[in-house]
Image (cartoon, rainbow, N blue to C red; front, side, top):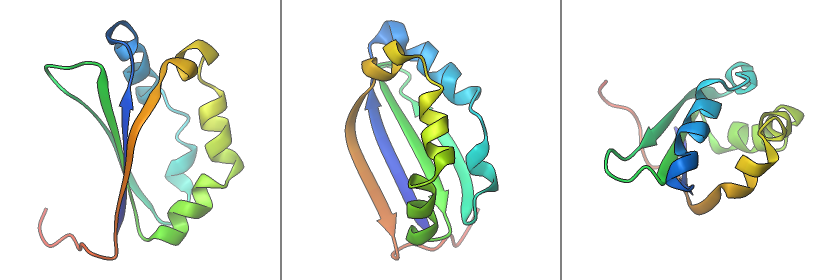
Length: 103
């Protein structure tokens, strides 16, 4: 299992717009080999923090998607002013360490 967590910052007045963009995503990633799921988290108390968590079979399939035209297309569809308002605060990866042992 490979997990990628992107901690994003956006002004509070743009937070709902960012969440809506994730909700209305193109879903191109869903058909990529190794993709398991994607969740978007937002703090109840701090709407400026949005965390995108994607799970993959392994690091190689994640890297292949990140280099794909589908990944570029999913980002290019965002309104340029929203895209520039998003700041990547932290990128974390968990891999080769964890197995899901209970759901």
